[in-house]
Length: 229
Image 1 (cartoon, helix red, strand yellow):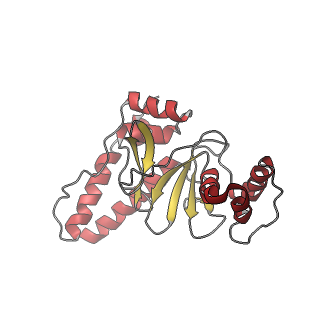
Image 2 (image 1 turned 90 degrees about the vertical axis):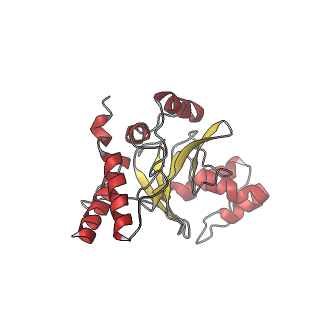
Image 3 (image 1 turned 45 degrees about the vertical axis):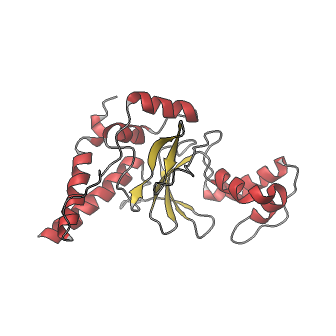
């Protein structure tokens, strides 16, 4: 596949708009790289082998042509890095807690989440009793999994998806890597539950990684042009 179809010129466009914004604020060039380095084909193959999944093609080509992290919607993208010999998605340079994609099952859509929790609890030999208005069956998870309940609940909720972006205000973006909606994006408000909703474009269509990223870039470019006109 010709990867230039997706991302030709995008890296330079992002760098240009970021520099334009810095000049508009009276700052000089940034001393730091705009993007993480791109990944080699061998590195991408290593990532996919580790997680046992083929990355969505639009994201896969982005890693190869644009970078493994950098500016993006909802502030910035997470960085795909090798940490202690294993790949993971790192937010805000926190390499102690990388997101590790669990490709063992499809991503669970919001409307199916309560049923998934019930199935998990029953598989553990526990009949669900408490469906909390805000957290569904999280109280029952604490009964079954004890101190690990929050982590089990969180990891299961993100199964099949990549934590792809964050804005430091408890809003996170997720790229579905496994399941019928593979390649689509979901928005998660960490302050509420159920927290995942599709990112929608101006025509009401669900965003893929490419449309989501390019829409953000085009908006930044329009804003930058207005600020310098």
